[in-house]
Image (cartoon, rainbow, N blue to C red; front, side, top):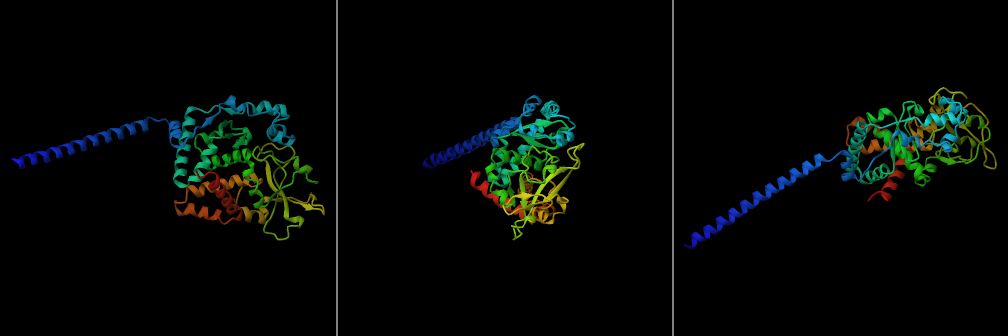
Length: 363
């Protein structure tokens, strides 16, 4: 009789365990299905908020037009050559033209950009936490606007904390362009993060007009992302830094006083002299094409955006993004990354930048 009770007890326990197991399994299955359904029901903006705490701010055409200010440094600083390159005769004419220089961003374009940023952030989160936090911080600090095709000759740029992208970018977003312009916002908003870097790259700030450069300043192209014309560069590898020939003024200079386009420029480097009091001056020698200044190109590398320290470091930010995203990619990509790391300027930037993000963006 006892063994019958014991067997009944064992069978009861087994039935209980089996029943409990299948109930739990069903519950987990239901929860997983609900989680999947909830996930699939999330919009892309909701995923950006949920997984990355990012909210993207888009400006419509009217909101973007408010960025154009007649008394702002960019518009106010237009001289005749810069007005001519923009097909305007006066600042008032340029102001009226630029107020109508933006288009609304369509819902389809917003979806494209949202997907792009969602995928980018997913890759960065899997690659480098500090860099992920850095990019996230600055995405949450910006707005995005869409330019008409003619604005600034179709070149992406920034105004205040807004990235102004070309129309094609909203069809097929370019990650390096995005990080380039994001860097310009960082430069404008927190320049102190870069003020120790620029001297390490050989740049010095000389905040006065240089005698002999007056006619050059008149044809220097205005760039909203690098407004300051007072940066000079010297080769840090040259031991005799007292020599006047170590110092260069560099700019994107129009080919005439009445250019027909913003692209009608040469990137030039002008050798400067320096007197006994340390004052720079220019003897109006023939300018060098920047592509022919070997010491500059050996230090910084092949970089078409290399005429201003803001542009140089934004280009290096592009290279850094390529390095972060492609560290596991095929050899052809790695060969590009390895080439970048051959240039001393980039390695200085990378060391400085990584130290900054590891200190300030690691959590």
